[in-house]
Length: 438
Ligand code: SF4
Ligand code: SF4
Image 1 (cartoon, protein in one colour):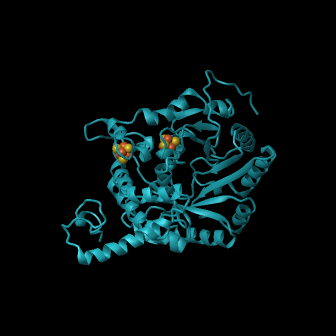
Image 2 (cartoon, protein in one colour):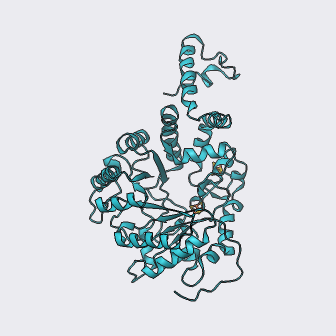
Image 3 (cartoon, protein in one colour):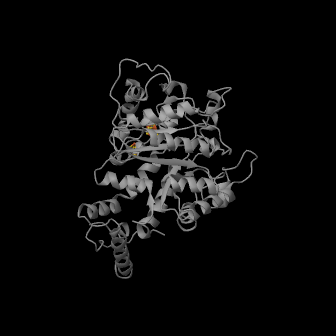
């Protein structure tokens, strides 16, 4: 479409990377109070915020060609991608079919607030094997607390209607739940609702850490009142983990638990937040502007426009490679010496705006929660990792814990609290199997 010129010098792009595509930019039909993307509309004054067809085709061609792996995933996000209308996605699929070389598998992951989903959308999702991520924050009062439409009206009913349609049509879906000041104090209500009423088998929980400033950029060192605290985040994860590890392992997948298990068996986490370095999860705006990450759609992190510079060159730019390495290279000493660094890696750089106890900047705002949670799950994770190494299902953890807890209940009646724990740990009973967990 245009003469593409390569900038110099070009570093090596990774063999595979992911791009969150925002065909409608930041435009959304909802007005979720904590949304970090709504403020991005200010970056494109006067724009119609609609990806042009020629750009869609150009992007599809370049994106597929840039992935040197047999499976290519298109990630659709917003704003709200359904606002592009179904015909746009019909064309998107047609371009994918046109440019996919034989043997390449194309996948589509579609993140939506669900409010505009109808039978026609569902038929399309089903026909083309889209994986739909539905945003839902818990039972009705918790969901509606911040997730309202432009008129301030609740959206829970519409989201549940979308869920029903997705289920009726057999569309594959998972849930994305943001954790914030309103729902973080209700871990079991949220988890059980998602498991039992929404029927999701794959849950993602995204902590809302929203900086208190006027720009909407990652600036300043204060979080808004809507944000959760690190302690609340840790307490939430611990509460749902304790339920999951006793009854749901192997049938309910919670992203952060999977990521943790990978770390305990020494494999890469599969999620940039807990990787040592990042930089392979970029974002593209409706006009072809490419940014280092979905959380850094800011002028400072714009790599260029794919209509002017080939996508592969932009992804391989030295500044993007450096962006990813900085995640590791800027870790404060407190993190480098932390006992759970192997799984945490300091978390996402966007949240590193507090100081360590000895005054070094760059500590993650969620540190307290990460540390509590990863320490809390250490023993069950070790057991599950051992089961996996022995080629047995990690779900065996549920039987192992049940037996231990039955044994501990027996000991409660026969062992003094200050006696040595009969399990042989060398600890006092009250600090080991006799610990009160309420
Ligand atoms: S900045 Fe955070 S969200 Fe973005 S790629 Fe790095 S770890 Fe992932
Ligand atoms: S738990 Fe805290 S100190 Fe440890 S690596 Fe994570 S952010 Fe750093």
